[in-house]
Image 1 (cartoon, one colour):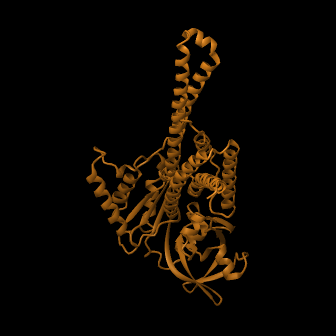
Image 2 (cartoon, rainbow, N blue to C red):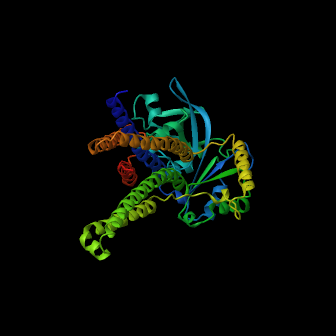
Image 3 (cartoon, one colour):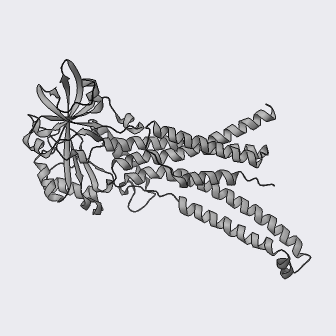
Amino acid sequence: MTDKSIQKYAFRKTALSLALLLLFSLAVPAFNACFRLSESESYERVELRALNMGSDALMQMDDLKLLQEEFKGATLSFSSLVSTHLKSGVQTFPVSAVLTDSNFATFADWTLTKGNFITEDAYLRGRNVAVISEALASKLFMSLNVIGNRVQLWDREYTIVGLYKLPESLVTTLNANGVEQVYIPMTSHQDMSKLPLQTVFIKSPSLAKVTFKETALNEVMIKKLKLDINAYKIVLYDKKPALLAQFQDILNFCVALGLSIKIIRLLLYFWRKSLSFIKSNLENMYLGSFIKRYFIRCLMFLIITFAGVGAIYIVFRCFQPQIYIPSQYLPQENIFDWKFYIETAKKEIQHHNAMYHYLPTALESSYSTLLVINLILLGLSLPALFSLSKGIKLNQYLKMGIGTTIAMGMSALLMAVSGHMLLTLWGFYEWVFPIKGLLLLMAYYIVNSIAIKD
């Protein structure tokens, strides 16, 4: 390889590695914003999800009255999915009929675009009304002006009263199963008294003040509802945004650690040169004379020292990882109790295997998908960080000028921001622009680009 081709390779390696890191730093908070926007008041929300729909120990509609008494002022809703077929003329589509009430729209992850959801009057009277998606309306009628049209479910006619639209994002696409959901009143189903409640939604400001929500709900289920606590899984969302944010914190901490190490190396190099200069001059003059003669240089020594130490402090203060581990996964006495961790892992595996028929809600599926996406992006970010460090060292070996260093940094920033904007426009995630993470990565690139002469 010629010197020119090596220089081009070093330029591409550094610029692309930095661009990927910047893009990942933008993408992780943007993906996580999908979850925060889905449920902004997650600390007030709880879901009870049936682990086995064939169980006799599940809640019925009458049990909601007892829950309403227990959580006064709370908004409650429920849903039960029934697989069926929807007919319109000669067309037939497999659908999931979601039997619910008028409060469900409060917990839904979609947007109502036309008409209205199931009203309280329609629910109480058991009217045959339905809310379908815009996609299903287009398939059935080749139009979105379908309010008032009728479709057939279980040999009965339902009138379309509303249209909804799912958010367009990568998370929604990964969670979709290809089966359209049609929302109808539970009271319109002829076997409603026999149908158990698959999901129960609770949202209440009082829940935000409860420290141990799972314990409190277990007590309500056992003492008030007389239910088996193993019949439902209690899904909490108050800590999930913090859990998702940890992945970005880990990446920022790794970058901050590398940045701090480089600053320390620069300070040690500066101190070694300064002390050598001071030592050589103090052999020929007194300390007072030296300070008077080299006052500006002494002042710069103090300023650079305090600036370097202050920079390290600020970096660790701003980017220290906020690690959150649920209390049930930590031993109460000895953190190094390995038997506890092994038993906990066994219980989690057994619990997962027992949830064969478990159907998570849209919000829970969104969290699980984002968890996987965060893991993948973190797994890609760490090699990109390693590649960037190698690229910077190669540039220093080739003695790239400051102009080339600036060009690589600007190219990487332009590619990352452009890619972020395109991904947002294509609907992969919500628009979020975290300046702090970008500044940290650019500071890492700039500081590590400063060569230390041995």
